[in-house]
Image 1 (tube, rainbow, N blue to C red):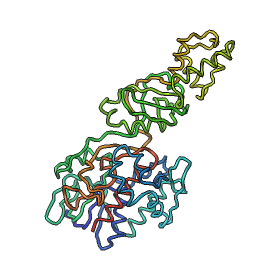
Image 2 (cartoon, rainbow, N blue to C red; image 1 turned 90 degrees about the horizontal axis):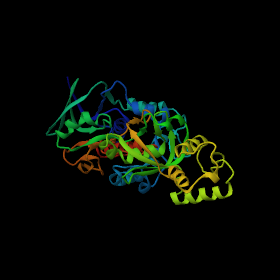
Image 3 (tube, rainbow, N blue to C red; image 1 turned 60 degrees about the vertical axis):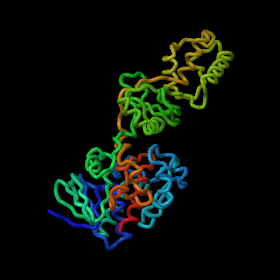
Image 4 (cartoon, helix red, strand yellow; image 1 turned 120 degrees about the vertical axis):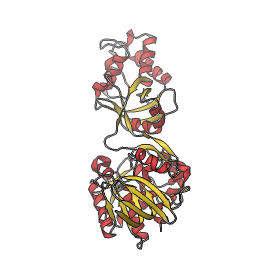
Amino acid sequence: MNVKTDVLIVGAGASGVFAAINVANQHPHLNILIIEKTSKPLSKVKVSGGGRCNVTHACFDPKELIKYYPRGNKELLSAFYQFQPGDIIEWFEQRGVTLKIEEDGRMFPITDNSQTIIDCFLKEIQSHNIQIHYQTSLQKIETKKDGFIVRTNVNEYECKQLLIASGGISKLEQGKVLSDLGHQIITPAPSLFTFNLPNNAITQLQGVVCEAEVQIMDTKFIEQGPLLITHWGMSGPAILKLSSWGARYLQEKNYQFRFQVNWLPNHSLDSVVQHLEKIKTTNGSKKVINQLDVDVPKKLKFYLLEKAGFNNELRWAEINKNQLQQLATILTSDIYEANGKTTFKQEFVSCGGVKLNEVNFKTMESKIVPNLYFSGEILDIDALTGGFNFQAAWTTAWIVAKNMG
């Protein structure tokens, strides 16, 4: 069947739906249709933030905001001056959805329920009579004089303007379709994951959280923050941030790499050696295990002492210089070998996609194919966890809507 429309949007995720609503708001004369390869819209919105939907982050200075984007930060600077977290907060407020700021800056609906965001979007979709065709997968795009012919597994669509907002998971599927149009596709790579440590003794401490500094060895990739020990390895903000910045490097390594943990992130090896020497001087007759004054959880402290070769009965007076150095080394540069990764919860994020210098970020229009637009994760843009990926989706979609029609 041949279906004609003014604007065709590929993808009923966060960016595609937000773009559709704003195209309809700004250009009510246009006929808008969305095609979606699954049977449900906004699936990523549903699971975000543990089902609460981390809509955005309370960072209102574009120059600060771009620091959370390992890829796309330069291009997003001008985009955030057009539409930033303050604007998405206001957008939802105008539609009766109030967002709240948590201590770490993440923002959620006050209902703590992602369905609130989904219902808001679906209400807007319905009020603007925007159609969504489900289980419809993009197969080929052909250009014509006044627009496009888009072939799918179900229908053939004719449109004047086309937005690709199909998200990160489908980048590989869309790659050939877009490369056939002349676009260069950067190979996708997961960019938000935890480190697997198969059969490592530290996994017995699952649930322990500690502030730490983590560095991928032989690289400049280093991050500090809470580290969570899990039954499969290590997670938490420090690891997730590191996985994002090092995404492409770690993919090249097939997720087999070494990294070191400084369990006392505000201290160096030398300063810890001096600290241990002071403890030894004043506590010679006492057991090390009872008198190790360092800021790490008790279970982790016992584990690190054992790893350094200290038994439970060892007293400070019995420790020689080499043992002291060994303990300080374990505390400040504890080395692990990762073998594999685990996706962080259900929040799939990947880098890769349409090469950024082929897109005009003032309009989000292709520099290669007129009237072809991009928004969201189909672009080679990704961010740290905390609502930043959604903000990039809202921003790029809003710019598309502003410039279509």
